[in-house]
Image (cartoon, rainbow over all chains, first blue to last red; front, side, top):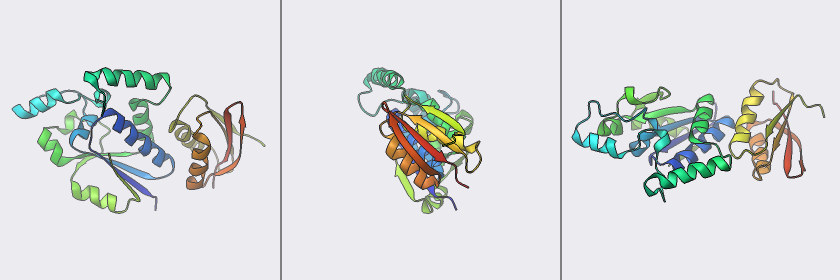
Amino acid sequence: MKDKMTIIFFSGTMDKAIAALILATTAASMGMEVSIFFTFWGLNFLKKKRSYKKKIFMQKMLEFMSAKDKNSLPLTQMNMFGLGRWMMKKLMKKKKVASIDELFLLAKQFKVKLFACSTSCSVMGIERENMIDEVNDIVGAATFLSEAKDAKINLFI
Amino acid sequence: MKVDKTLDCVGMYCPIPVAKTTIELEDMKPGEILEVLADDPAAKKDFVSWCKTTKNELLDYKEENGVFKFYIKKSE
């Protein structure tokens, strides 16, 4: 049986997303089976675009203040209303470090599985149709734990 | 040493060299040798660990003007 790695992506910030994707793609390239569970702020990574459909007032406010997709996630520190993120992206490009898009493509190529947490989806009002097609499923904690139980590496990012 | 394919990862950083190597090796036959060029200072240790985990054999490596050359034999 293949070794497994599971990652919970909770934070929804750009720098942590890059860390998660680098570890996911490297583990997959080393022959591990990798699953990433997106929950809470991490769900912003999976969104197609900003959508206010079928949302109640507070969910609309939340949507308004959240990142609209994986390319607009803020930095964990020094975001400075997006200026920090802009500078970080520029710096990474200059240094020829892989971007979120490149890493995400690799992750898909290596068949990294992506799961969205059903409870946070319902809290935030995020529906399947506003998630990118690559999402494998919307699941609960039990599904995650049954995967994580057999995984040698479990990370909470 | 007879090299079957060369992969140039000069200017690229972790995790791209190992990821590209994985993709490249997928299309190769067991026993064939892939030459990887990389200048990421972490590449040396990374390829040693990567080969150990994936069971592909790291036949040799050298360093020339700051560029590492790795010779990886695809496992059975």
